[in-house]
Length: 171
Image (cartoon, rainbow, N blue to C red):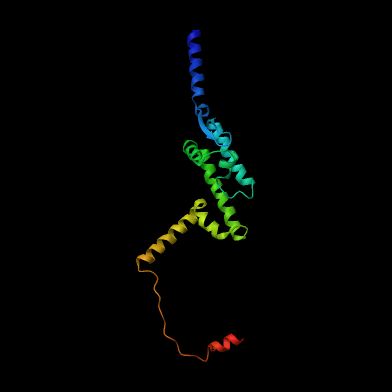
């Protein structure tokens, strides 16, 4: 009887150790140049820290700043973790939105270079991405139609209601 109970206990312990929180995998850390172990808890803590860093740092405008510089990860590691853990995927979406808002406000207030922000904004915001795709489609449509058409209008006769050009420039 003791053997049966002990065998059941061993099965329960093995089941606990193979649950997602206890399944270990390694990832390469660029800060220590070593492989580090990670499990579901590690990924969850990473996601929490990523969101916290993005929310609390008003100058956080690059989505990869914390994963690469703070946690020492490659982008590919984060993408792999997103496939395995919904928390990391949700954190990525949320941080993208935070960065998009900050970048948009920074460009509007002229704290950031608007032309640079406009070029990179589709990475951060789906609305900007859709707008850029629409513009590209429109440009393609114009090009396939033979380009822009220039229409010259004939000169209209002068009118007493509209002052002549010389008079407007002298004021």
